[in-house]
Length: 299
Image (cartoon, rainbow, N blue to C red):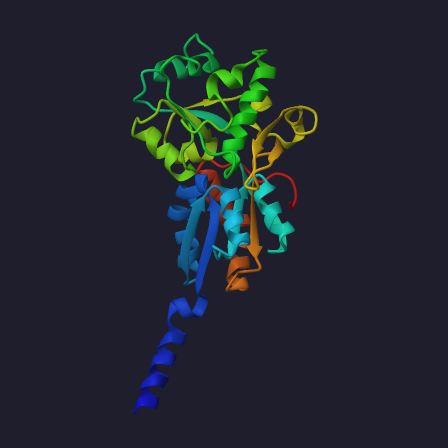
């Protein structure tokens, strides 16, 4: 009787959707929370009789957790190639990371802010509004998150583009200014709640949150890979790395890359997920949620 019962349990497990396809664990750049957890992840899971689990944080932080074996994931998605290159160097990427979408840096602002009308298009340039006394500006940590680095690069490029020496210091203070730094998944939520006046943001993520934003020219928004060598690449800054040593950082274009990891418990399902991101249906999901088309080749 026990053997019959055990056999029936095994048969039931083999016929269940989860057993047929398994669970897909996707570690993604925290700015992608809306499109990943509410659109792409559930859609893929339903089509493949699978269970989707999303993990959104700063991409450099996620990469280090994976390398340190503190986080298991099947697929890794980053904005800028830097985080996935850490995983490639550690030998944890199966094949090559593929470009799946793109975005641009913007300045998001709260419609509840007393500075909202000025940022919406008054006579004062956006960067002068951000220098206003009492304005609360938020951004993410440049040690763990590409966006935290990219807003610094945007401000440094703005200094050159608008001929405004010292602009970055006036708006950001020290590059590692803890008074301005919040986690990536929470920063736009705080902005929505009116806890700050303005913040850094990726256009796609800000679009997903239905927040107003200042659109920036290509010369400072890091969206155009063709500008990397001759323009974006002119700015650099230094932070203290996890090893306690100074690290000089350089710009990278705002392209989202997806990679199957060698830690994948179901490599076939993981590859299906990356293929879906590149498919017409996946690309429509991205574009419907404010993302640009993928640009460039594999990382």
